[in-house]
Every structure is written in C-alpha cells, then in structure tokens.
Length: 335
DNA sequence: CGGAGAATAT
DNA sequence: TATATTCTCC
Image 1 (cartoon, rainbow, N blue to C red):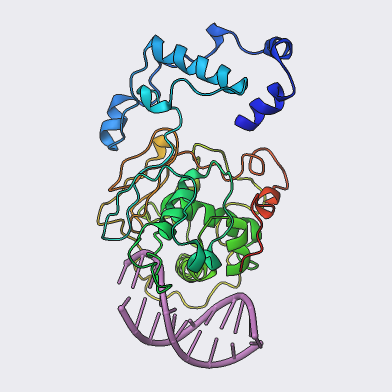
Image 2: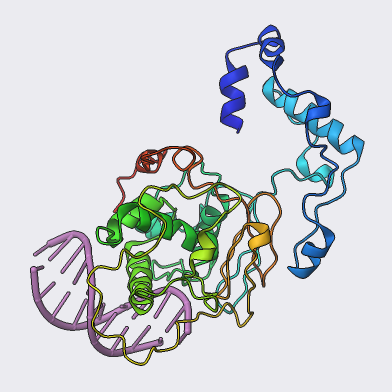
C-alpha cells in the first residue's frame, strides 16, 4: 500500500494530493477506524488479541503520521507511542519446543549472514512479513550456534501461512511440475531452503495420495486441509491451476481399508477451522510463528496476519503469474 | 554433478 | 509426528 501511496502522491506535491483526493470515499463512506472488526465472541473463541480501542486521538495521530510520511518527513509519533499499531511488525516466533520469543524489529539479520548466507534466500519487501520474519528468525536467533560456522538453523516450522504459500505455489505449478527448487524459488521466502521444501513436499504428496479421490473430509482439519487455503485475508486463490490440490493422476489402485486421514498436530492444540477469520486451519504442524500485521490469531506463540502472497498476482489476474516472486527485490543469485 | 524423491534419522 | 538428513538414482 505504501507503494500505491507513493505512486500516487510520489511525484506530486500538495496540489497533486488535492487532486487525487477527489473521488476518494468521503468520511461517511469509510468504515470508521473505531469500528471493531472482530466480534468479541470470536476474539474470545479463538484467543485473538482484540484490537485496541482507538480513540479519535489515535485516528488523528495516524492521519498526521501518514501525511507527514507522504511528505517525506519524520514520524513524530513512532508507532509505539500509542496503542495504535497499524502495522505491528514482528511478533514472537517459536521454534519447536524452545520458544524463542523475541521481538525482532530489525529488518535484517546481521547475525549469521556469513555462514548461513548460502541458504538465505531472497528477502525483500513482501507484506508477507509473517512468513518472512519467521524465517528470518530461523536464521538469526540462535546466536549461540552460529559462531563457528557450525550453526544449525532451527528447524523450520510450517506455519499455516507458510504452508499456504507453499500450496499456492504448488497449485499454480501443478502438482506434477512442482519440484523443490522451483517451489522454493516461487515461494520467495527468505531463509527457506530447498531441503525444507523437499521435505514438506514429500509429506504433502503423501497427504495428497492418501486422500486421492476423496473430497475434503469434514474431519480433516490438518494443515493440509484445503480449508486452510480458503479466504485468507489477503485474497482468494486464483482459479487458475485450480485450488483443488490434487488432479489425482492415475487413480491409485491401492485404497485398502481407508487408513486414517493424516492428521497433523499443532503443538497438541487442536486448532479450529477459523473460517470466520478467513483462516482455515486446523490442527497442523507445529508452531512456528510469525507475526505480521493486522489482527493476529493467537496460537501458542503464533500469530497470523495478512498474508499477501501476491497482491499483484493473486488478485483478479486470470493467468496469475508469480512474476513478482520471480523477481525478488534482492538478487536471487544465491544457491 | 545437481537435483528429485525416497528412505531413514532425529 | 514433523522436519531434517542421508541415500539413490536420474
């Protein structure tokens, strides 16, 4: 969005601004910032941190901040100054059992670069802050082990947002053409390695195989459940490569006594399909975590945000392409 | 020789 | 179980 703003107001000055302001919804047409987006019942039911109550003062400060930013000046009201965190940047991350709960606010991860850089992937903007930051954490945190190049990156946790991205990419590529390297590249997630993807892909395929033919099982709340792909704040899935995970190649002969559907646990916490929040998700993998903007769903050390994999690609684009993902802002020469 | 995918390890 | 690592084969 910043981009949009800059594009519009960028080359302009005050006059221009007045100009483009014409046509914009007026006050009465806009949803008041003070309006609660997530009903109390839901925040309670899903342990969501309720949105802070915004006062008029908050709104005004936010406006001023925005204006000043557009004018290229300093932000007189650092976000933290008020409870108005429009863009909570980072959130706690949790790695497997150790729950490293750090609030990384710095964009970069200076720490391990050298030794780990090999695997560092592209980074760049991406409002996919969540996915991004969580992985970034994977690289940085553990200040202890990166000392002598013997660092081991913490095991990756496939959080729903991350998995979602994964599935979107796989889906777009077509399950048959989706291979680790390509997936990794298209996902464009910093720190994600081919190995990470390969491993997950193996599991994903297993999942698809097991569910061949069968429609979404109502009891399938696993991370792999299609429900997790449904409406997620950021947008909908392009109809393109279809969202149905498996075109199911040759119907496997085997389909014995219907083995139990693969269920994944999520830190032992049976996550509910938070469809109401546009977060289909069930129990699933372990925690990992991430944080992003907007309301976060609270799971054990877990936060969700808007996951705009592609505000450009996804959205009403027929043949969605992952162009932008293919052109990471950061050179993608690594690996 | 890199990489995909399966097998195995943790 | 979920993810990582190793092993095979292409």
